[in-house]
Image (cartoon, rainbow, N blue to C red):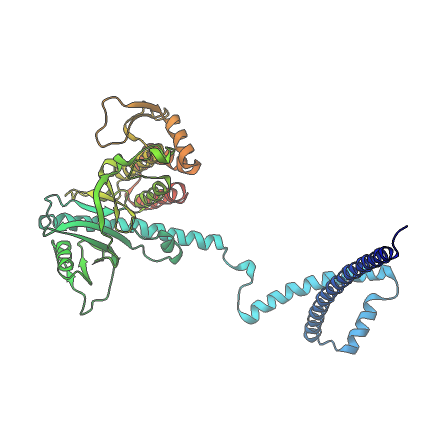
Length: 465
C-alpha cells in the first residue's frame, strides 16, 4: 500500500504542474491579446491618419469652391438622391466634371504662375543628349591643345638629359571623365611626366588647357622653351606651380606643378610585355611581380580613356606593350608609364587614319591583357575574313616560332578571362581600320562633326562598358 506521505507529495506535484500549465496558457493568451490590441491600435492610427487626410482634402476643396458646412450637407443629399441608379449616374457625371475641372485648373495655374506644366518640360533625354554633345565637343577640342603641348615638349628636348626627350606619361593618372560629363564644362586634361632634368629625376603634372588670371605669385613662360623653363623653375623650387603659354590660336595655357603627393618609384621599370601571363594561372605559379586581372582591368580602363582623349595625336604614336613600362611606388600602387619620344612631325587631327590606327593599337593592348600573351604579327586576307594572330609568350624579345591562333580563338579566350563586354570592346577596336576608313572622303566642314560621332561611338562601345 502506498505511503500516504508519498501520495500527498505526488498529488501536490500534479496540482502544481497543472497550475503552471494553466498559467502558461493564460500568459500565452494574454500575449496574443496584447498583440491583437497593438495591431488594432496601429490599424486605428492608420485609419485616423487617412481620415485626417480626407478631411484636409475636403476642407481644401470646400474652401476652393466656397462650400460651407451647411451647403455641403445639402450638396451631398442632392448628389446621391434617394435611389441607387441615380447614384451611379451622378457618379459618372461628377467624374466627367472633375476631369474638366482638372484640365481647366492646369491651364489656370500656367497662366497665373507663368510656368510650364510637366508635359511641356523638355524631356530629360534631350538634356542628357545636349550634355553629352558638349562633352564630346570638348574632347575633340582638347586634341588641339594636346598637339600644341606636344610641340612645346619637342622644342624643349635640348634641355633634358635625353636627346630625344623621352618623357614618360603616366597613363593611369588622368582626369575623371564622369565629372566632366556631368559638369558640362570644358574638358581639362592632366598629364603626368617623369623626366630627368639636370641629373635629377622629377615628377611633374601638366594640366590644361586653362585660362587662369595672372597673379603676382604666378610666372608665365612663353616662347620656344616654355615647357623647359617651367620644368626648370619647379625643379629648383620644388613647390608651387608655373604657367606656360603654348603656341597656337585657341590652345590656351597649361599649369605645370609638382604633384601634392609624389609617390617615389621603387625598383626598376619593367616593360608591360614581360608581365603578361595567363590570368587563370595558379597563385603559386604566378610571377613575383604579379599582374592580376583586377589590375589589368584598371589599366585597360585607363588605356581606353587615353584612346578617347588622345587618339589621333602624336602622344600615342608609340602605343604598344613593349613601350609601356610598369613599376610599384612607395605605397605599392602600380604605375604604367608610356615612353613617348618627342617627334618633330605632328599628325593632323582632322585626318582619321591616325585615329583609327591608335584605336587599333588599343585593341591589341586590350587583347594582350586578356589572353596573357604578346601579340606579334596580325594577318587578314580581306575585309570580311578573320584575323590570324601570331602569339608569343611574355617577354620583350619574341621567340622565333610564334603560336598561331584564329580571331575566334583569341576573342573567345578574352571573353572567358575578362567578360563579354571586354571582348566586344576588343573586337570594335580591331575593326576600327575598316569601319573608320570610309569617313576619309568627307569634306573638311563635315570632318569635325564626323569626328565627334566617332568619339561618341568609342565612348559608348569601348570606354563605358
